[in-house]
Image (tube, rainbow, N blue to C red; front, side, top):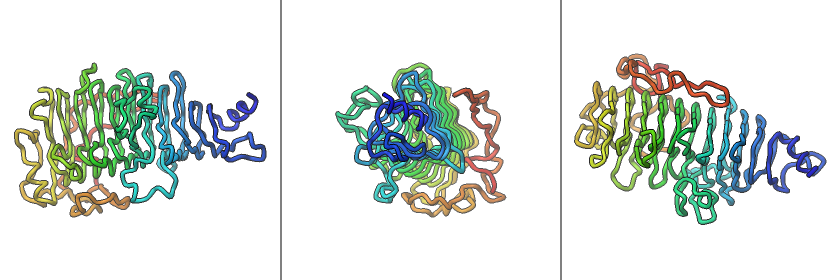
Length: 418
């Protein structure tokens, strides 16, 4: 018992199991505050700049909280392929200069694992009241469940073996979820799969998502959300998948605005969506979104369409490839919005990005040097509207802090002039 207390004091975290190979400082029972190996139950605080090696599935118990400070690197064991299960609360709060990173050992961060599958994901059960990811990176996950997976045993997500898990699953309809200034990349399945809660997704980057299926932001019934200023690149199917499936209350109601979606939908092996998909009575209000080189325009399930109250307005389309432009054109399945900008010929309405080459291959890897801001005089300027209401203009309070959905802009897409 004395050894356990020493570990708690040194690491500032409750950990029910620590590996014997954890780094030590003289006394083998004392773990350095910047290095820790964990599995089992965790709570408390992982202090800034710490290196946390996750050797097996970890759990934040109901009624407990795990806070992760700036600069922490959480390294997942690629043999154990752990799941990160939240029954309590999780606050991961990095900074732009020192984000929190959920990753794998450096040797595994290669193009061989472009779609990850080297660990599970963050899975928040119905007892998780609050979850915050701010300046946080999630990468190289989306492993496939087995009968032995903790999520299967505990009835989480789809509660079945053989399912690739999303980077983030949240399921409490009374819960609060904010994901902002964060990056989710190199995942084998959906970046997010949200089945409940008051939700803000703002100013995030999603790239290289979904091996043979999978979406960027996947919202279901039980969710009220604002989704704004996200860049979504090279997702297998849809940047946004919006469905009232699940028969939870409240009905899915999303206000999605000023997002930039690029090169999505082309890796889907069968024809479905390729930018934004709406179905099953979702109440969706979509404004000021910029769709570039996506496989389809905003698409509905004609057999199970959206709520009649839905609004589609001020979508700006650009296609370098003619097959994409052809599939932007309004039809029974492709939604025509008010004040949309849509051409009929490849190359029409070039948004004039600062440094993203619009002829980039449909399935090309993401390049961190690209700049999706636009040049002075870009035709996207002035094509947005700002008169609509947001769900969370007054904010959502998590861990005593207020997080507001950002104000809309008078341009389309997520980025202004450089």
